[in-house]
Length: 305
Image 1: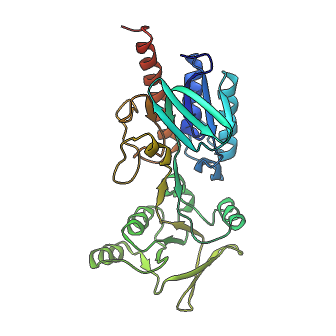
Image 2 (image 1 turned 30 degrees about the horizontal axis):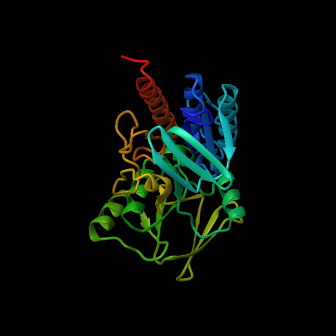
Image 3 (image 1 turned 90 degrees about the vertical axis):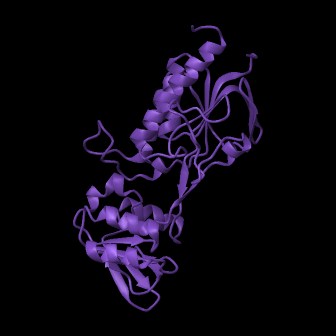
């Protein structure tokens, strides 16, 4: 280990990356977290299923608390975006603008990005804050209990999300973002579940009122208490590809039970790994990855049997 080399570079400052930083710094590891500020957790108005917060917690507040905790134990957190990441175990090199970092090991917690409906950023944030727009039925389907719900995405993914939400409400309508791509089996299962299908594709969403107004291309308007975009997501896997890490068919990182990837010295945690996209899962990944990483370094240093 060279004097300017750190033990671990963590890419991503969401729940997974920050949890890993807390664990690793408490293992007395030299840790740098590089975060570009785009964690999906940042956009959560209030999480009600995070254990220990019975009244819920705002996503930004949660991340702030986690950053403060990681820094308390010695983690360095840098706001930047890594452009290049190369090398191999014991000798990784990252560059973010003018910043250069050398590390013995890498933990990728880069997450995924939701595909959004076509609305401007300010409207999007306001709609999230008011509960008119939601992305995670597992997270907040409970808050939509009994409401009129629109599910945007008339394909297999949209069908699956609409059926999941049927647990919470019997007033669900599937909206087509572009074209309706439903086979007869999809239509039959939706009909049995009592889920309506909008008669024509969506033209635009209006969040200016107390409800969401869905203006359809055919001229009809539908109103909902909340809308769930079921448009999928894109994995932030560019750095994983630079390192030659194996990816799944869904373009997420493939990791073993210790969160090790196919590239020696590279670990992954959180939504970038194919799993249930939940804060609790990301934090669990991070704890496992941090312990495995620490023990792997100990073994390389002759500190374990």
